[in-house]
Length: 167
Image: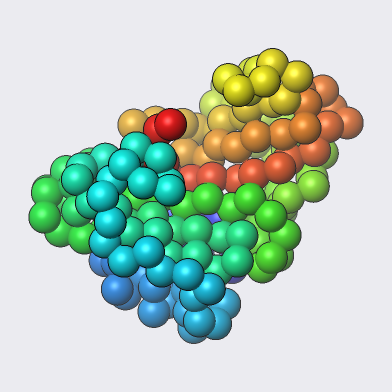
């Protein structure tokens, strides 16, 4: 399974942001097994932060979470449940980006893979000693995450895709 700035590759199935919720869950389950948690449709101000629209659904496979909304996005009009973001914050299951970046990869490796005008590294909003990185971040797509710091030797601690939810 590969994480990208446009969605997730799950075996032979390309799950782009905007993919149908039930079909996305079925495809990921075929690769990773049964989810470890499914929130069902809950208020968008939830354990996932403040998400777009009024309802959000989070489906988790240990440290990998897919988020679904029924809100208006660049992919669908309101009322159509669809995939809009993922969070990967640990090492179970072991996942990588298309460029081979995983949890624990060095910032140097991250910059080698994604460096250039579409890559940024800044201080994390919650603590300036940590890093916050982005790649090709746009309105509803892109990769982003956090790291143990901002220099080459520091390590990636999360890989996220899509818009995500605010605090």
